[in-house]
Every structure is written in structure tokens, then in C-alpha cells.
Length: 57
Image (cartoon, rainbow, N blue to C red; front, side):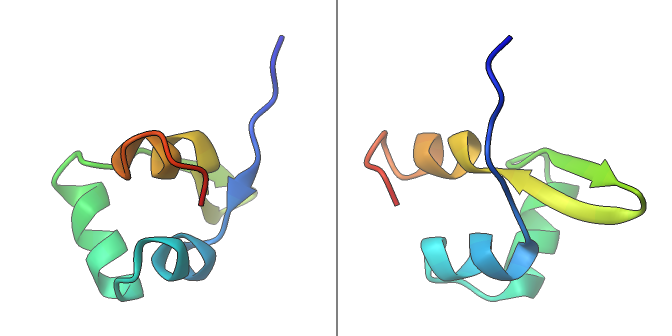
């Protein structure tokens, strides 16, 4: 089973060049999926890479 790196909303927003609020909107709109770890929201790094066209961020 392949594991994926999990990013905080802040890390994801920095990689995409958007605000944390935009990350929240992207989650609500279904553009990103969140992972909850003990109540904390995380975003899979692979989703961020996919969003920016496969270029490693």
C-alpha cells in the first residue's frame, strides 16, 4: 500500500499560491478532498500535484 504525504491547509495554500480560505472553498466545492487526522484537516500532496498538472510542488 502506497502512503501519501499529508499537508496542512497552510502548506497546501502555499503550494497553490492561494489563501487558506480558498482551500476551504475548494474542499466544499469538491475540487479537493480532505483527510481528517484526529480532528485536523489534511490534504494529500498527490491532489495538489494533480491540480497543478502533475508538476511537483
